[in-house]
Length: 298
Ligand code: SF4
Image 1 (tube, rainbow, N blue to C red):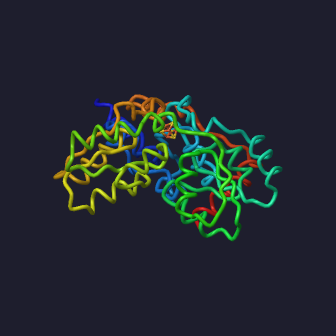
Image 2 (tube, rainbow, N blue to C red):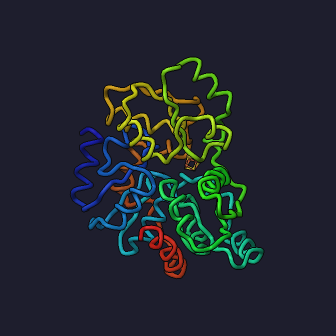
Image 3 (cartoon, helix red, strand yellow):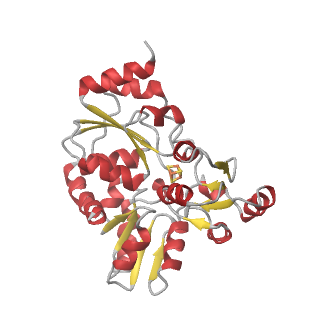
């Protein structure tokens, strides 16, 4: 029997749902019930009734689903799929930042561990970071752990002072301003759409900066026909499906996150069949981290 069909049967028998991030392999996106960015998937995880969630993404995403749905079984098909950006900061680092800036709230990008979220006041994603920071009454805000996203937010909310942590996504950090120059020459008619996890000089040189969902929406609503995409390769799959009459090119060949690409069809099958790689978060940690996440979800 084909693997896809076996997954479908196991999923039905167990009342499971498959969530996949846009950066997952095409084959994974194809078997998923929901495909989207971190913000969309967090909302889905918090609202669906299924007892078992197979989270095709990286560890912090599956942890987030578990924190939001503590009574559900959350499986991460490849247990060592982590996020180097999330690993740049520890709970101790956050405590130390809070000591240095005792009156500043901590806004924590969702790409962070449960321990780091538990030390934070409110979580954000790249879709809502600007809106959430702008709405805070405080003048000074600690923004962790992505320095590039923090810089982007700071520029949109110039009346606030953002204390940034020097973390970055190694995948998005590969893009350089010269790459933008090169694609402008190669595809002069194209719009360049970039993720704010890229370096500030790259973001400044692009036509549009936004989260994965915002990039997809921009392309869908645009009259233009050609786009160069400055985020992870997997997004091209969603874009090709939602805009079949448009052309998409990847800004840099290195925009491939090795952790996101670990999950294959057989990983999902094994996760469902053997209930392997179940995510656990201690209740004490989950209570604190949930507070920061629910403030974000509103
Ligand atoms: S693309 Fe970057 S931020 Fe996203 S999971 Fe991979 S390393 Fe982490």
